[in-house]
Image (cartoon, rainbow, N blue to C red; front, side, top):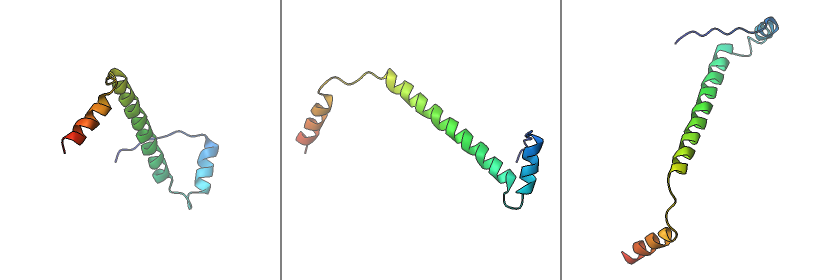
Length: 75
């Protein structure tokens, strides 16, 4: 694993020390960073999908009806 350093105000560091028995700070920070990366990746994926959908022209009126009818007639 790589090491990442983070600067926090002194009062935050003192509070972290107070709760170090109850909280595994490195694990909590790791989870937060991974969660934030995944959230941004999801948002970018949705934006890309929206852009892709905007570039696709809609099917002509009656296309779905035509396909359903063709499917029913083929059985």
